[in-house]
Length: 193
Image 1 (spheres, rainbow, N blue to C red):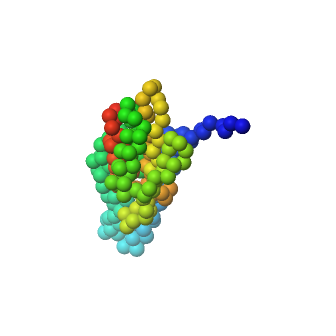
Image 2: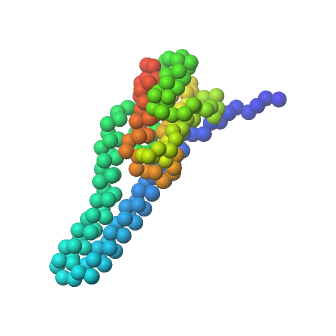
Image 3: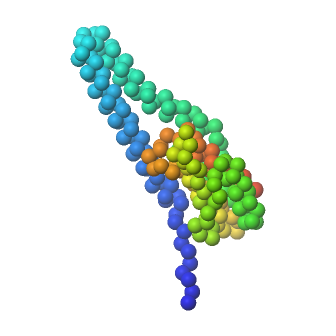
């Protein structure tokens, strides 16, 4: 009796699905905060009355919008610092091709994961490992999946880093940093688009 070939999950599809989820979460957060700000601004305006109440209400609304706008701008700026093949966003996905032997690639990947503070990688299939970072003061934790497979006579390394908590869409570039750290560590890596 032979075992059926392993069919590992499509990481790109999972990444795109999670990216949509984060986009919906961001829209919902902005809408709720803007709605709360608008409601509070209207209450302040009604309580104060006149032009001064209107100005105060507008300043309250502006304050609510800044509560989310400033962290989003800081996150975007930090994300831009981590160059490499992985894309932007809290669900960071990237791929590189290499001619290095698999043992050398896995050694470099494991070293990069340890350097970024991830726990011991655990295999999910012969081509894929998953590693996680624990909860900290800045994050609910992160998970990274790394896959090495043969492609056109070379090795194709895929790294997908994402928050452990599915609604943590504001990550200050951490996941892009982790994915790029792994991909940039691969010997002889050339980005795949």
